[in-house]
Amino acid sequence: MNCIERQDPKVWAAIAGEVARQRDGLELIASENYSSPAVMQACGTVLTNKYAEGYPGKRYYGGCEFVDVAEDLARDRAKELFGAEHVNVQPHAGAQANTAVYVSVLEAGDTVLGLDLAHGGHLTHGMRLNISGRLYHFVSYGVRPDTHRIDFDQVAALARQHKPRLIVAGASAYPREIPHGVFAQIARDCGAKLLVDMAHYAGLVAARLHDDPVPVSDYVSTTTHKTLRGPRGGMILCKARYAKEIDQAVFPGTQGGPLMHVIAGKAVCFREALTPQFKQYARQIVDNAKTLAEVLSSGGLELVSGGTDNHLILADVTPLGVTGRAAEKAMERCGITVNKNMIPFDRRKPLDPSGIRIGTPALTSRGMGPDAMRLIGRWILQVLRSPDDEELCTRVRGEVSELCCQFSLPGESEG
Ligand code: DSN
Image 1 (cartoon, rainbow, N blue to C red):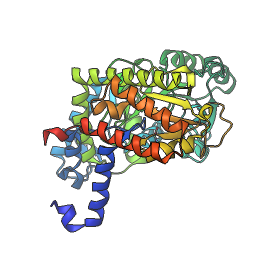
Image 2: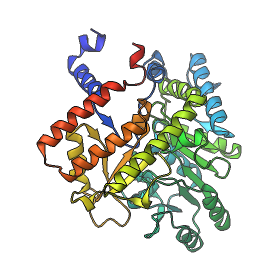
Image 3: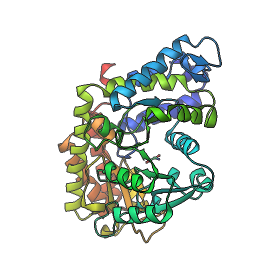
């Protein structure tokens, strides 16, 4: 019995339930992953006890000599991994990373271009209830109706018309590679700065499989827990000339004490991402997504943009006579976890949209490959064609469990 179980059985029951859920089900949420035991151990250390407001060598508290080592390791490794001139590893999450960039570049009321949430953007790219949309004047660009690719003619026209101070590129539900250089040219032409939010595909950038935003952008923000497979957290990369303003915008601008245990986890993650094995892992994420996309598309799902270049698939499920919400629920009952999602030009509402978003980073971390993807694709199609068929659901649930038994969670087989 461990000490949580002994002291607090209710919390332990929740943790144990989640362990079983993650082990016995198929995790296909595009923004989730399984971090390594080393990353999780770093996050569960005494570093959580330490206050360290400030930066290595310039802290507002004594006793920071060891956390300074951890933060320097994280910064140096992130710089090496992404070829960045400056890195801030303190943002608690991607939303905080984006907010800090906004605080450093913008005044309230300034104009910013960002991808429409309904076309694959993110809450922090100007959604009206988010602080980004409340403080700044965001103008949304979208994807083309025929190709579902970013409409760069529209981006350029909006940039000429609105003369934004900042352009935000990057997405959370966009299945194609983003050509960051095109954004950089548009930003240069209108005198704007460029922020690329690569949270979803940072692992693919680290593995040099996706167009690299770092050389062409002023700022790059990311989370560390999606394709990058680290602890839950955020990070900002920028040109050296912006280092002072970015560091000030994170602390004391928008955050207090950094989460030093998580920063240690980020350092461990970046070291893992520098290995050839990580590159192989990232390649398999994309291969798996392409295989799954082919099966789903040939079974009648309409894929946004017709397929995928990265770790995710956005599928219109309505051709099978089911909505996004019903699809999510039916698949969940069978042990397959995805999220309902708006598709571009969706006629339905966000709480019951036409689509689902499916991602392969987590299952790839379990070691699953194309054979498993083909099986999973067939199960998804069967369930979506008959979402209320209890007998089918019981059979698929059993088959999902059998597959999960063959692929342990990262580190589990090490005992
Ligand atoms: N909520 C995350 C996602 O699922 O894409 C983005 O922050």
